[in-house]
Image (cartoon, rainbow over all chains, first blue to last red; front, side):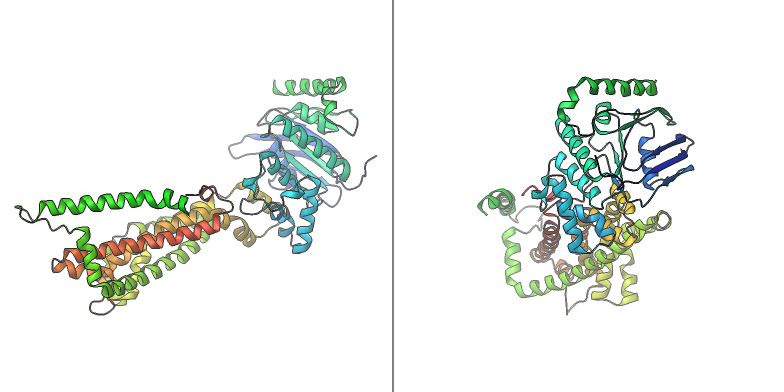
Length: 250
Length: 264
C-alpha cells in the first residue's frame, strides 16, 4: 500500500507543562505515535495542543516527563499562518531550512524547486509573499516544511485562517503528500471534519490541563477525495469524534 | 513621469508659489514706513542674497554638509551597533537603555563650550554635536524593530539549528530594516540642525565657514536677507539628506514592504 519506514515513532511519557503563575497546560499526558502514522489531535481552544506540539518539536521544555523518538528525527513545523520571510522570494523562502542547516546553494535551491513542485507551485518560484494569496502562502509554508525530507511533520492548525474551499484542497494535498512520503504526521486542529478527513487516528484532549478523552482509529480508506466528505461513513466517523470533543469541552 | 509630476511635484510646487507670492506682496505692501519696521525679508531678497554671494554660500553649504554627513554616518553606525547589542540581552537593555536617553535629553548647547575646550573649534566638535543630537532616534527605532521580530520565525530558525549570527543577519536585521530607515530619516534632519547649532558656538570664522557661522555673522550686522538665505540653504540640505535616506529605503524595500508598494 504505502511506503513505510520513512517516518519516526514518537513516545510521550508523563508529560507535564506548568507555566509561570502555576497554570498547568498539560498534566501527566502519555501516548505513542507509531512510525508513519497520521494522527490528529483535537481539543477545545486553549487546551494545550500547541504547547504539546512545541514540546515535541523541542521549542518548549516540559516541566516533567519526556519525549522519545524511535529513530533519526528530522522535524518540520508548520505554524498557524504561513510566516514567510517577506523579503525573500518563494524559492529562497523554501530553501531557508536547508540554508540554515548548511546545505550548499545549488543543492538547496534544487531541493526547494522540487518541494514547490510537490505542492503545485512550480511556476511561482520568483514571486514574493506579498504577491501570493493566503492559500498559496500556506502551500509555500508547507513546501518549506517538506524541503528537508522530515521524518516527523508537526502542524499547528495550519489551514485555520483559510476559506473552506482552499482548506479542503490543501487537506487533500497534504493527505496525498503523506501517502507518497510516509513520514509521521501530528496534526493539531479544532475541526472534526478536517481531522477525520486527514488522519487515521484521532486523539481528543480535554481543556486545561489536557487529558485524553478519546484515542481511536478513523476507519476510512487510505486514498481520500472530496466525494468522501459527503459519504455516510465520513459522517459517522465525524459524529464519533464530535461527541468526544463535546465531552471534552464540558 | 508626467503622472509622477502631477501627483508628487505639482501640489507642493503650487503651495510654494502661492506662499512666496503672498509673502512677497504682504511685505512690500506694508512697506518700511510703519511705526514698527519689521525686518522680514522678501523671498526675492533672499534669492538675491544667495545669488550675490553664491560662491560663499556654496562653500558654506559644503562645509555644513560635511559636518552633517559625518555626524549622520557616525549616528548610523554607532546607533545600529548599540541597538544590536541592546537587543541581544534583556539585562543589557535594562542596565543601559536609560542612559542612551541622555543623548536625547542632553542640552547640547550648554555643553558646546566644553566641547570646544576638549576637542578645539572646528569640524571635530561640530561632528560630535551632530552625532549627539541624531543618534537616539537611530538606537530607539532600530531596537524597536529588532525586538519585534516575528517569534514564530525565531522558532523556525531555532528548529533548524541556526546560530545567533545567522539569526541576526537573515532574520532580525531584515525585519528591523523598515524601522531602522525611519530612524535614519529622523537622524538625517537632526544631523543638519545639530551641525548648524554647533557652528554657532564651535564653528570657525574666516576659513571653512559653515552655514551656522554665516547666519551668526550676518545676524550681527542685521543682514536679514543673508540670514534667511543661510536658513533656507540649511533646510534644503536637511531635505536633501532626508531624500537620500528615502531613496536608499525605497531601493531596499521596494520588493516586499507595504510602505513602498504604493507609488507616491
